[in-house]
Length: 283
Image (cartoon, rainbow, N blue to C red; front, top):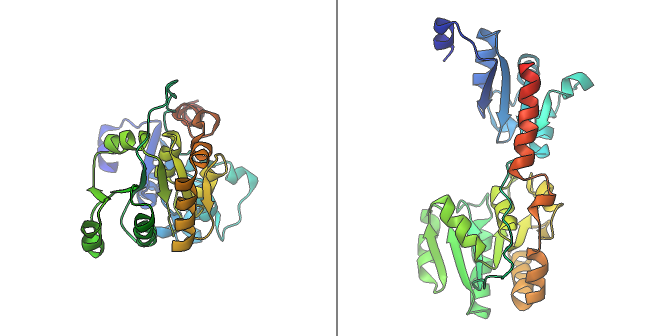
Protein backbone atom coordinates (compact mmCIF):
# COMPACT_ATOMS: atom_id res chain seq x y z
CA UNK A 1 0.00 0.00 0.00
CA UNK A 2 2.83 2.41 0.89
CA UNK A 3 4.75 1.52 -2.29
CA UNK A 4 1.60 2.00 -4.34
CA UNK A 5 0.99 5.50 -2.96
CA UNK A 6 4.61 6.53 -3.42
CA UNK A 7 4.70 5.23 -6.98
CA UNK A 8 1.46 7.00 -7.81
CA UNK A 9 2.65 10.14 -6.02
CA UNK A 10 -0.97 11.02 -5.30
CA UNK A 11 -1.71 10.93 -1.60
CA UNK A 12 -5.22 10.96 -0.11
CA UNK A 13 -5.94 13.64 2.46
CA UNK A 14 -7.21 10.99 4.91
CA UNK A 15 -6.16 7.37 5.41
CA UNK A 16 -8.41 5.32 7.72
CA UNK A 17 -6.99 2.21 9.36
CA UNK A 18 -9.32 -0.16 11.23
CA UNK A 19 -8.12 -2.42 14.02
CA UNK A 20 -4.53 -2.51 12.75
CA UNK A 21 -2.43 -0.21 14.98
CA UNK A 22 0.86 -1.52 13.58
CA UNK A 23 -0.29 -0.72 10.04
CA UNK A 24 -1.28 2.80 11.12
CA UNK A 25 2.17 3.25 12.64
CA UNK A 26 4.03 1.99 9.56
CA UNK A 27 1.95 4.11 7.18
CA UNK A 28 2.44 7.23 9.29
CA UNK A 29 6.23 6.71 9.26
CA UNK A 30 6.35 6.58 5.47
CA UNK A 31 3.52 8.88 4.38
CA UNK A 32 3.65 12.48 5.56
CA UNK A 33 1.03 13.91 3.22
CA UNK A 34 -2.04 12.17 4.66
CA UNK A 35 -3.84 12.44 7.99
CA UNK A 36 -4.16 9.05 9.70
CA UNK A 37 -7.38 7.97 11.40
CA UNK A 38 -7.01 4.80 13.50
CA UNK A 39 -10.18 2.99 14.59
CA UNK A 40 -10.16 0.46 17.44
CA UNK A 41 -12.99 -2.10 17.37
CA UNK A 42 -11.32 -4.28 20.02
CA UNK A 43 -9.43 -3.76 23.26
CA UNK A 44 -6.26 -1.76 22.43
CA UNK A 45 -4.32 -3.73 25.03
CA UNK A 46 -5.14 -7.00 23.27
CA UNK A 47 -2.87 -6.01 20.37
CA UNK A 48 0.78 -6.93 20.87
CA UNK A 49 2.11 -3.49 19.97
CA UNK A 50 -0.61 -1.47 21.71
CA UNK A 51 0.01 -3.23 24.99
CA UNK A 52 3.08 -0.99 25.30
CA UNK A 53 2.37 2.52 26.70
CA UNK A 54 5.27 3.89 24.65
CA UNK A 55 3.80 2.53 21.42
CA UNK A 56 0.42 4.09 22.22
CA UNK A 57 2.13 7.43 22.88
CA UNK A 58 3.85 7.13 19.51
CA UNK A 59 0.51 6.42 17.85
CA UNK A 60 -0.92 9.56 19.41
CA UNK A 61 1.94 11.59 18.02
CA UNK A 62 1.57 10.14 14.54
CA UNK A 63 -2.21 9.81 14.12
CA UNK A 64 -4.52 12.73 13.44
CA UNK A 65 -7.40 11.00 15.26
CA UNK A 66 -7.82 7.74 17.15
CA UNK A 67 -11.41 6.50 17.44
CA UNK A 68 -13.03 3.78 19.57
CA UNK A 69 -16.40 2.01 19.48
CA UNK A 70 -16.89 2.66 23.21
CA UNK A 71 -15.61 4.77 26.08
CA UNK A 72 -14.48 1.52 27.67
CA UNK A 73 -11.95 1.01 24.83
CA UNK A 74 -10.89 4.64 25.03
CA UNK A 75 -10.10 4.24 28.75
CA UNK A 76 -8.16 1.08 28.02
CA UNK A 77 -6.06 2.94 25.47
CA UNK A 78 -5.29 5.69 28.01
CA UNK A 79 -4.22 3.21 30.68
CA UNK A 80 -0.73 3.87 32.12
CA UNK A 81 -0.07 6.94 29.98
CA UNK A 82 -0.37 10.60 30.99
CA UNK A 83 -1.98 12.84 28.40
CA UNK A 84 -2.29 16.59 28.01
CA UNK A 85 -5.71 18.06 27.22
CA UNK A 86 -4.58 18.85 23.68
CA UNK A 87 -3.55 15.23 23.07
CA UNK A 88 -6.82 13.95 24.59
CA UNK A 89 -8.65 15.87 21.88
CA UNK A 90 -7.30 13.35 19.40
CA UNK A 91 -9.33 10.59 21.05
CA UNK A 92 -12.98 10.13 20.03
CA UNK A 93 -15.75 7.61 20.60
CA UNK A 94 -17.63 6.61 17.44
CA UNK A 95 -20.20 4.00 18.46
CA UNK A 96 -21.54 1.24 16.26
CA UNK A 97 -25.09 2.10 15.31
CA UNK A 98 -28.44 0.92 14.01
CA UNK A 99 -31.24 2.37 11.93
CA UNK A 100 -34.13 2.82 14.41
CA UNK A 101 -37.03 0.51 13.68
CA UNK A 102 -40.34 2.32 13.24
CA UNK A 103 -42.91 0.76 15.53
CA UNK A 104 -46.05 -0.56 13.87
CA UNK A 105 -49.35 0.78 15.16
CA UNK A 106 -50.59 -2.83 15.19
CA UNK A 107 -48.38 -4.93 17.44
CA UNK A 108 -47.24 -8.19 15.92
CA UNK A 109 -47.66 -11.27 18.07
CA UNK A 110 -44.30 -12.51 19.32
CA UNK A 111 -43.05 -16.07 19.66
CA UNK A 112 -42.76 -17.31 23.24
CA UNK A 113 -39.01 -17.75 23.07
CA UNK A 114 -35.61 -16.86 24.52
CA UNK A 115 -32.88 -15.93 22.02
CA UNK A 116 -29.11 -16.17 22.28
CA UNK A 117 -27.01 -14.70 19.45
CA UNK A 118 -23.22 -14.94 19.46
CA UNK A 119 -20.19 -17.18 19.71
CA UNK A 120 -20.74 -20.38 21.68
CA UNK A 121 -17.84 -19.70 24.04
CA UNK A 122 -17.21 -19.18 27.74
CA UNK A 123 -16.18 -15.57 27.12
CA UNK A 124 -19.68 -14.90 25.85
CA UNK A 125 -21.19 -16.74 28.83
CA UNK A 126 -22.82 -19.31 26.58
CA UNK A 127 -22.10 -22.27 28.89
CA UNK A 128 -23.85 -20.48 31.78
CA UNK A 129 -26.75 -19.45 29.57
CA UNK A 130 -27.21 -23.03 28.31
CA UNK A 131 -27.35 -24.41 31.87
CA UNK A 132 -29.98 -21.81 32.79
CA UNK A 133 -31.92 -22.45 29.56
CA UNK A 134 -32.10 -26.19 30.25
CA UNK A 135 -33.64 -25.49 33.68
CA UNK A 136 -36.03 -22.96 32.15
CA UNK A 137 -37.21 -25.59 29.67
CA UNK A 138 -37.91 -28.09 32.45
CA UNK A 139 -40.28 -25.61 34.14
CA UNK A 140 -41.66 -23.63 31.19
CA UNK A 141 -42.00 -26.30 28.51
CA UNK A 142 -44.00 -24.12 26.10
CA UNK A 143 -41.16 -21.64 25.79
CA UNK A 144 -38.62 -22.23 23.04
CA UNK A 145 -34.89 -21.58 23.21
CA UNK A 146 -33.37 -20.25 19.95
CA UNK A 147 -29.58 -20.25 19.61
CA UNK A 148 -27.70 -18.54 16.76
CA UNK A 149 -23.95 -18.96 16.32
CA UNK A 150 -21.23 -21.10 14.86
CA UNK A 151 -21.36 -24.58 16.42
CA UNK A 152 -18.75 -25.58 18.95
CA UNK A 153 -17.74 -29.19 19.49
CA UNK A 154 -18.12 -28.83 23.29
CA UNK A 155 -21.87 -28.19 23.00
CA UNK A 156 -22.86 -30.30 19.99
CA UNK A 157 -24.41 -33.12 22.05
CA UNK A 158 -26.29 -30.77 24.38
CA UNK A 159 -27.69 -28.70 21.53
CA UNK A 160 -29.14 -31.73 19.79
CA UNK A 161 -30.34 -33.53 22.91
CA UNK A 162 -33.03 -31.23 24.27
CA UNK A 163 -36.45 -30.66 22.72
CA UNK A 164 -37.43 -27.07 21.99
CA UNK A 165 -33.82 -25.92 22.25
CA UNK A 166 -33.34 -25.04 18.61
CA UNK A 167 -29.83 -24.51 17.29
CA UNK A 168 -29.93 -22.46 14.08
CA UNK A 169 -26.18 -22.39 13.49
CA UNK A 170 -24.40 -19.50 11.82
CA UNK A 171 -26.97 -17.64 9.71
CA UNK A 172 -27.21 -14.46 7.65
CA UNK A 173 -27.26 -11.27 9.72
CA UNK A 174 -30.49 -10.06 8.09
CA UNK A 175 -32.22 -13.30 9.11
CA UNK A 176 -31.22 -12.74 12.72
CA UNK A 177 -32.58 -9.19 12.68
CA UNK A 178 -35.90 -10.41 11.25
CA UNK A 179 -36.04 -13.16 13.87
CA UNK A 180 -35.42 -10.71 16.72
CA UNK A 181 -38.40 -8.63 15.57
CA UNK A 182 -40.74 -11.51 16.38
CA UNK A 183 -38.98 -12.78 19.52
CA UNK A 184 -39.89 -12.19 23.17
CA UNK A 185 -36.66 -12.34 25.22
CA UNK A 186 -32.99 -11.83 24.29
CA UNK A 187 -30.08 -12.69 26.58
CA UNK A 188 -26.55 -11.25 26.33
CA UNK A 189 -24.63 -12.97 29.17
CA UNK A 190 -21.05 -11.94 28.30
CA UNK A 191 -18.48 -12.78 30.96
CA UNK A 192 -15.63 -10.90 29.29
CA UNK A 193 -15.50 -7.15 28.70
CA UNK A 194 -17.28 -6.55 25.41
CA UNK A 195 -15.72 -3.84 23.21
CA UNK A 196 -19.24 -2.60 22.37
CA UNK A 197 -22.20 -4.99 22.15
CA UNK A 198 -23.91 -5.06 18.76
CA UNK A 199 -26.32 -7.88 19.68
CA UNK A 200 -27.49 -5.83 22.66
CA UNK A 201 -28.32 -2.70 20.66
CA UNK A 202 -29.95 -4.78 17.89
CA UNK A 203 -32.14 -6.60 20.45
CA UNK A 204 -33.19 -3.30 22.03
CA UNK A 205 -33.92 -1.84 18.58
CA UNK A 206 -36.12 -4.85 17.76
CA UNK A 207 -38.15 -4.14 20.93
CA UNK A 208 -37.25 -7.46 22.50
CA UNK A 209 -37.31 -7.66 26.31
CA UNK A 210 -33.56 -7.84 26.94
CA UNK A 211 -31.33 -9.22 29.69
CA UNK A 212 -27.69 -8.16 29.56
CA UNK A 213 -24.36 -8.30 31.29
CA UNK A 214 -22.83 -4.89 32.06
CA UNK A 215 -19.25 -5.89 31.27
CA UNK A 216 -17.07 -3.59 29.15
CA UNK A 217 -18.89 -1.49 26.56
CA UNK A 218 -22.24 -3.14 27.35
CA UNK A 219 -22.61 -0.86 30.37
CA UNK A 220 -22.62 2.23 28.15
CA UNK A 221 -25.54 0.88 26.14
CA UNK A 222 -27.44 -0.40 29.18
CA UNK A 223 -27.65 2.99 30.89
CA UNK A 224 -29.79 4.43 28.07
CA UNK A 225 -32.56 1.80 28.11
CA UNK A 226 -35.01 -0.21 30.17
CA UNK A 227 -33.35 -3.62 30.27
CA UNK A 228 -32.56 -6.16 32.98
CA UNK A 229 -28.94 -5.50 33.90
CA UNK A 230 -26.87 -8.35 35.33
CA UNK A 231 -23.83 -7.18 37.29
CA UNK A 232 -23.07 -10.81 38.11
CA UNK A 233 -23.16 -13.55 35.51
CA UNK A 234 -24.11 -16.94 36.92
CA UNK A 235 -26.76 -19.55 36.30
CA UNK A 236 -29.05 -18.35 39.10
CA UNK A 237 -29.04 -14.70 37.97
CA UNK A 238 -29.78 -15.59 34.35
CA UNK A 239 -32.48 -18.10 35.33
CA UNK A 240 -34.25 -15.65 37.66
CA UNK A 241 -34.14 -12.84 35.08
CA UNK A 242 -35.65 -15.08 32.37
CA UNK A 243 -38.23 -16.45 34.81
CA UNK A 244 -39.27 -12.90 35.77
CA UNK A 245 -39.99 -12.03 32.13
CA UNK A 246 -41.74 -15.31 31.32
CA UNK A 247 -44.12 -15.03 34.27
CA UNK A 248 -45.20 -11.45 33.59
CA UNK A 249 -46.32 -10.05 30.25
CA UNK A 250 -46.30 -6.58 31.80
CA UNK A 251 -42.61 -6.99 32.64
CA UNK A 252 -41.88 -8.06 29.06
CA UNK A 253 -43.74 -5.01 27.75
CA UNK A 254 -41.85 -2.69 30.13
CA UNK A 255 -38.41 -4.04 29.21
CA UNK A 256 -39.18 -4.01 25.49
CA UNK A 257 -40.49 -0.45 25.41
CA UNK A 258 -37.33 1.36 24.27
CA UNK A 259 -36.64 3.98 21.64
CA UNK A 260 -33.21 3.90 20.03
CA UNK A 261 -33.93 7.25 18.35
CA UNK A 262 -33.40 8.98 21.70
CA UNK A 263 -29.97 7.41 22.22
CA UNK A 264 -26.46 8.04 20.79
CA UNK A 265 -26.58 4.78 18.81
CA UNK A 266 -28.44 5.81 15.65
CA UNK A 267 -26.60 5.64 12.34
CA UNK A 268 -27.59 9.23 11.60
CA UNK A 269 -25.94 10.59 14.76
CA UNK A 270 -22.86 8.40 14.40
CA UNK A 271 -22.24 9.23 10.73
CA UNK A 272 -22.78 12.91 11.52
CA UNK A 273 -20.06 12.76 14.20
CA UNK A 274 -17.69 10.92 11.88
CA UNK A 275 -18.36 13.30 8.97
CA UNK A 276 -17.57 16.24 11.26
CA UNK A 277 -14.17 14.74 12.18
CA UNK A 278 -13.41 14.09 8.51
CA UNK A 279 -14.45 17.56 7.40
CA UNK A 280 -12.11 19.16 9.94
CA UNK A 281 -9.27 16.99 8.63
CA UNK A 282 -9.96 18.13 5.06
CA UNK A 283 -9.83 21.84 5.89
